[in-house]
Length: 179
Image 1 (cartoon, rainbow, N blue to C red):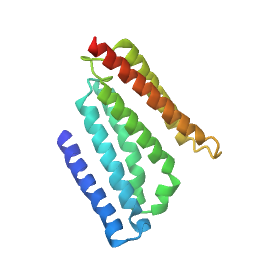
Image 2 (image 1 turned 180 degrees about the vertical axis):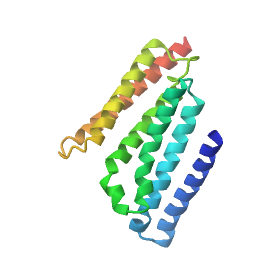
Image 3 (image 1 turned 90 degrees about the horizontal axis):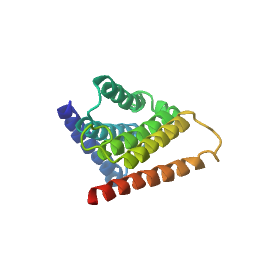
Image 4 (image 1 turned 180 degrees about the horizontal axis):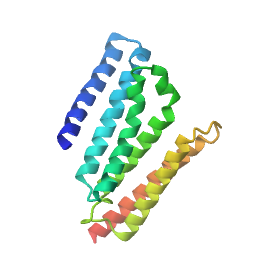
């Protein structure tokens, strides 16, 4: 599976860079290439995060495969966007929620929360779980497609709060390792 993710990571990064170079050098219309750009970006992000997750987890198989299936689900939107570009526009909350899920899964994988050995200290785990819950709340908030523009300002609050909580957990972890 890691080999497949490596190939997907390489192909999606090359295609994303090629599409971006074509847009800037050839002055191609971005709207024609938008579904391909979104697709390659989502595949790049998903393959990178899934590779991190598979290398840094010691979870039971059922949970591991459940997380993998949840990570593959947001990729369906850009895949259908190749057939109907308006599908991407209509289902952007699923893609955005997928990106939030990818960022949370990647950061929690890097932090070692899914391993049995070399677990972070207790307080760091507490803040990492709080970080995960805040990202899950943000995930649900995006999926609800709340239309009030003032409520979207809360996404900045979610992002800042999640970043601060993650930095607190990293600083606790570094302080415990330096002792």
